[in-house]
Image (cartoon, rainbow, N blue to C red; front, side):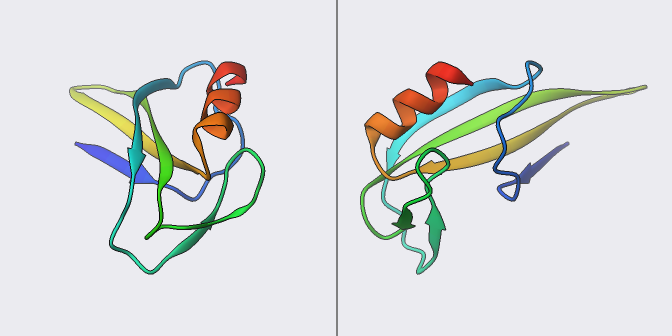
Length: 84
């Protein structure tokens, strides 16, 4: 089982790995802040998304946690993933 969150905006620790990095356009009316420059990102417009995974060590279970980061453009995603 996995857990997904997009609430944490601080840089991930070394136990996190980039699972996916894609250009997105969502159908949601949400506005989120770019994880790199903090610019408002309208989720209906073109933006980038990075999905991070980390294994959770639970006896008797295989599990992981997933977090999503949103970026206003490719350059912010590049900068953030280069320093993450």
